[in-house]
Length: 291
Image (cartoon, rainbow, N blue to C red; front, side, top):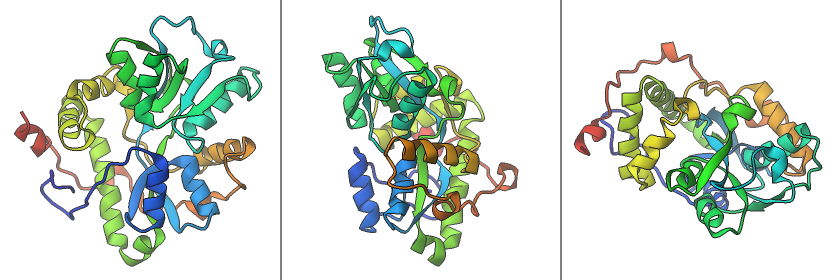
């Protein structure tokens, strides 16, 4: 629950615009749980930060974007180009290396430049980069504004792509497991509701645009509908086979300082089948109020 819902515990949400600040807030115990980059969560555990991955934020919801009139038509055309990534600890970085390997390209074939996600579209428009890979809504921003196009949706090149994961501080897991369960059930219910129909997605775009993202609602509506499976909000259990692949690739390219076992950084004990979770969300109350 947040200030814009009607029942349950009150969870205060904070918006961050860069990943290092998120990491420092977590270490300083300013926040108890956060959506963070998957490889970053692994490195936090390697650095003895007491957190566990408990759930996913979504599946897919990332795209490789190039200029609308760019001559880049497939992945090989990115050779010798500059592509922005959100962070070296992002799974977008891992994906770019995975694709280079699949296309038989050396890992230095593409210059990967770290930029905060909100800066990706403006950098493309300014011509300082040739492409970018980032999560929504920044991937769609260039497309909606008419100067970018999708080269690949990650759903088409890495099925059920994972970007952000929910990490929870271990002291919160130990001291208040019921609260953690309520949080994760709430995320699961929201995801089931979102994937339950286009009307729900449009309501969600209005609420999140006005109260959380502070973005144009039309941009978020585009993200949630063009195409409808651009971002998926179910199937959010952290699965060992998914994370093992990410971990191995991240270690191979030097993002992780060491390999780490799944059980060391994941606690999936709060994951419940969706049909076992009591939910009664028909429409978002705040969506009605905002119209």
